[in-house]
Image (cartoon, rainbow, N blue to C red; front, side):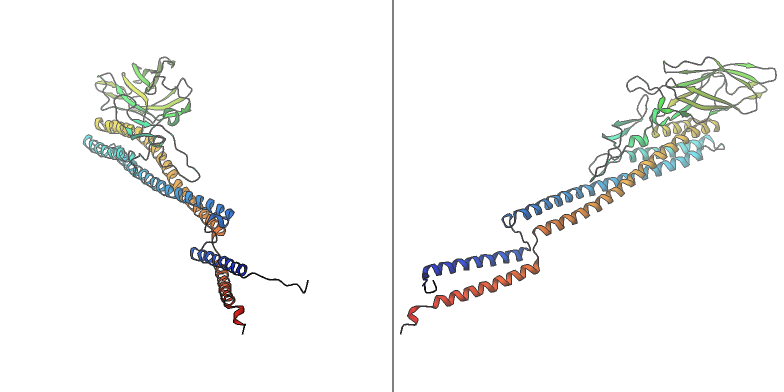
Length: 445
């Protein structure tokens, strides 16, 4: 075998050389393309598995970017809602200050009229604030969905203010926050949830007008409000209760008794029968505790306060025959303010003004607490949006690293491979050129 001869055809040698040169040239071009693009995987055929990993990472990155853009819009809406609730709190605080001032017993009717006008102006501002919309024209306090103006009123009948929407708070998600808030919970009163009832004074006996007499009530307190029996009539107002005073019985010592009855618009209510407030002494403050049990099991409690007077013309009882105290549910914060404004305008004496202020302040403070709670919830959503944004940014960085590992080029290695391929290609070209010059005729002499 050592003495065997091998012959390589010239055409075969040239074909093999040009094929190797082409392969080296293609490898050099591919390396140059990798360097210029900065990617190891320029097309899926370069590395199908890495290309698929990079594509999945890019899809997730694009989704996070879309969610982040949506989150920025939601954060803006929440910030606007938080600012709106802050404005509402500010208006209600001003109302409270004016109400406290209007309860001063030394005020004249003209002064109470002035306070009533100021309260009416603030009431109008509050209506504008609570119906405020976001940049897309959607109400900020529209709960789970509402008309473009969620709060309407006053309207004829009862309730006098309505919420045109579906109460409730929309839930936030892992990558999104709620953009509308439950204005119903903050501004509307539900009898079974909030137990907001007011006491209104009246007198059907012209012999004992309310003006000039001390006759008022405390704020109505309700135990177990959730058990209040609702009105079965569709859209009807909650049931009302009334305490009505009747005949007076005078004693030789100058004191007197007065009978009273308790009734209700609820057909299921069983009246306790005629009752008597006994031994009322003229010139001494009188307090009559009232406790009314709703058929559902809730208890309405308040106090009736009076001060009878003995005059040369005779006894001026207070409470007096014909006096009534009507207990009715308050529909909303706006209803509370309407009642207070109307009572201050019609108050003929300081006693009526004190009655109006006392009824309004308790409900105003309750509504203020609910507004603060909802504003605090808006602040928490802003914090949650910041946390979501931080989490999304961390995920984007991780996904970008995954994509880079899958398809990006190690530049140091890429430059080294390109230089090696370039040197090899140059050597192949030079050797090919040298072989091309060789011929047997160059050595035949």
